Length: 434
Image (cartoon, rainbow, N blue to C red):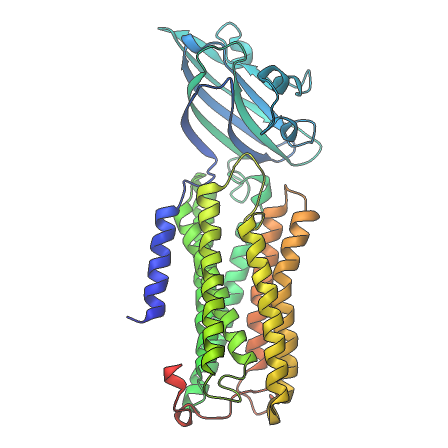
C-alpha cells in the first residue's frame, strides 16, 4: 500500500470520526436548558411554499413554553442571537400580527395544536411561510417566566414545495440547484476522465507518462469520485429528507484531496519538474513538502471546524472562518511562489518549452487566485439565501476549468505546440525516487 493511499485512508477515517449529524430537514431531539430562551434549528423557506410541521411534548411543570419563529432581517434574528437582551426583549423584536410566537398551551388548541393528558402537554401542528422572497427562518424556544429552565422533546419537518417535487421538497431554498449542478458536473467529469485516460494510454505507449501527468489523472479521478459521492448523498436526501451526511463529507474530502494534488502538480511543473529537469533540489523539495503539509493540515482543520465548531445559529459557509481565510491566503502564497518558480525556470533556459510555460503561467494564475476571489465575493456580495448554491456552482466550475485547461494544454497530439513532455520516462533515472 502506497504512502498516498495510507494518507487518504487515514484522512477519511478522521472525517468519519468528526462527522456530525447533518442539517437534515427531519430534526428530532430534546431541549434541556437552565436558560429561559434557546435556539433550536434553522431553515431557508421558499416564498409561498415553505411548510413547517412540529410535534412537541413537555411536562406541564415547564409550562407555558413558546415556539418562536424569527426571520433573517437585521431587526429580527441578528438583533437577538448572541446578544445580552433579556428573554422578553428577544420576544419583543418579532412583528405583531404575523404569528411568530406560538404559545404551546393546551388552552389555545386552535392556534397551537396542543392538548394535555396526564400532566403532559403534546402539540402537533404545522405552519406555512409567506414572504416577499426566500428567507432564513430560525426556531427558538422561550419561557420568560420560568424558574426551572426549558425542557421539551421535539420533532420538526421542514419542506419547500409539494411532496411530488423531488428537486425541491426536502431542500432548503439555498440548496435547490445543488443536486442538478452535481449531476451536470459529474457527467462532464466522466467524459473528461475518459479523455484523460485515453491520453494516458497514448503517453504510456510513448514512455512519456511522467509523474506530474499521473498526478493530474489522480486529481481528475478524485474529483469525479467526490462529485459522484456528494451527488448520491443529495439524491438520497431529496428522497427522504435525511440523506447521508457522512457520504457528503467523504465526497467533499475527495474533492479537497483532488485540489491538493492538482496544486502540488502545478507547483512541481512551475519548477520545471519532468519538463526541464528530472530532479528537484533538496531545498526546493523541503520547502514544497512543508507547504503541502500546511495546506493539507488546513484542509483537515477546515473540516474539523465545520463539524465541531460550526454554529448553526449563524448563516455561514465553509470559508467564513479563520481557517478558511488562512487557506485562501496560502493559495495566494502558492500562486506567488508558482509565478516566481516559472520565471526562474524560463530564465534558466526552457528552450522549446517557452510556449508551454507562457500558457501554463496564465492557467496557474487564474486557478490559484480564483479561489480567494470566490471567497471574497461570496462573503461580501452574495445573498445568504443563495450562497450555498453559488458556492457549489462556482467552486466546481473553477476546478473543472483548471482540469480541462491542463488536459488541452498537454494533449499528446502532433498539432499541439504546447506539449511539454519530450524526455522519456526511461531516460529520467531519478523520476521514481522523487
